[in-house]
Image (cartoon, rainbow, N blue to C red; front, top):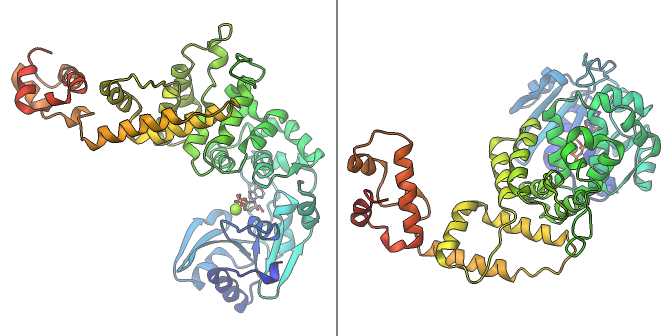
Length: 441
Ligand code: ATP
Ligand code: MG
């Protein structure tokens, strides 16, 4: 299969250049694995015996992206390529980073420091030579994720590997070999110390799998979820009203995540966590306030995992509003209030979340009401009605002058009160009318 692949021009160019200078060079890791599985890799990683400084000298545009670990990124017209010098990392003292990155000129040593047999494949596309020192091809055929060497030792060196095992199982639809799986539970204390930024990156990758639930459920069964997303683990066995729900809160969250659009990590994350405060809000079969409380909790959870403020705001906003209802009886003012509460830019995501949430209840989906609400929103936007304080035909200066106020929260309160009136009656959004109203609101 590999000898028939059309490799990107840039990858071939880099490997040819390195080999021309006498340095062995290979495609390595995920890209070789994916090609053997018949899927198109999303990145092409290259490994070579050339030291980073030597690689830098051979190419024009090189960025030292991870030079302390031997990685540089080469920019070429058809894309960017990570080139990493062969490494043999022996000691991991803190379970986070190799304490001593040692370069080697032996590809076999480099492959042996990698995490799983299926990731320890190297291919020279010029000589058409595959190196498979750990029976990776067999594990690919058997759809198995197996640590290289002793799994407890390997996960103790780097606690991220156990998360990667679950993530790859979901990405590839593979199982985790028994001893490798058992090692996850035995090394939880190491994983607990992993830098949250690294965990963040694996979660993002897991969210892009076809079924992230496979990975999260493996994390739950091995004990990982309890340390990474304990609030989600707490949803296990929390029962819901059987007339609406087939699953407990935990499984419902996971199913909602799978049902959310694969290319939209924000909605997937919101779906995964949308009901995390149901356990604490449960009274009989009701969960009053779990949306508000869930939005607050998710901010802490995502901050701990180093998500950006923008991501956190979006996910928290979706969770806060996920219980919205709609009726054809709503007046236009109610539709405008809905737009303001959810934020116009979040409405598509909120609807996607609602669809995923409904699918995960295994109920008939009647999204007719969403289409109706969307049509009414579109109409209102088209009419360009005022929806935000900044859309009012008066501003803070006008309020301060009219009421003789100095800058402060009072000014904002007056503007918000004016906006309420305009939401009820858009015809009031005229400067003269609003200036008169300032004194009375
Ligand atoms: P994906 O295709 O989803 O990116 P990947 O296996 O390529 O999966 P990367 O994070 O891109 O994952 O890593 C590239 C390669 O580097 C892996 O295939 C593996 O050989 C090696 N690797 C990555 N992380 C580790 C780790 N923590 N320990 C050992 N080897 C690792
Ligand atoms: Mg990769």
